[in-house]
Amino acid sequence: MTQSNKTIQQKIGELDELVAWFDSDEFTLEIALDKFKAAEKLAEEIDQDLQALKNEITVVKQRFDGE
Image (cartoon, rainbow, N blue to C red; front, side, top):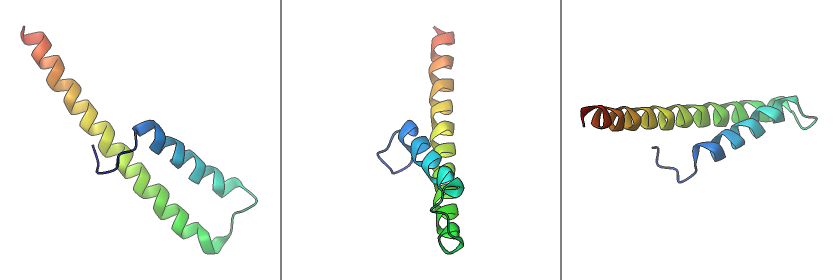
């Protein structure tokens, strides 16, 4: 997983909050780029975490199938 100690669920929650901000009354164009970059980074971390989990599951499955 990535360097963050947050779970995938926590990261998805943060991403949901960032996405919701774009629909909120607090939306301002000046802040939007920073929020977008943060959301993009979080989405990349989630993708990396999911890929790592997929790889671990594949290894475990191969071990299980081999026994």
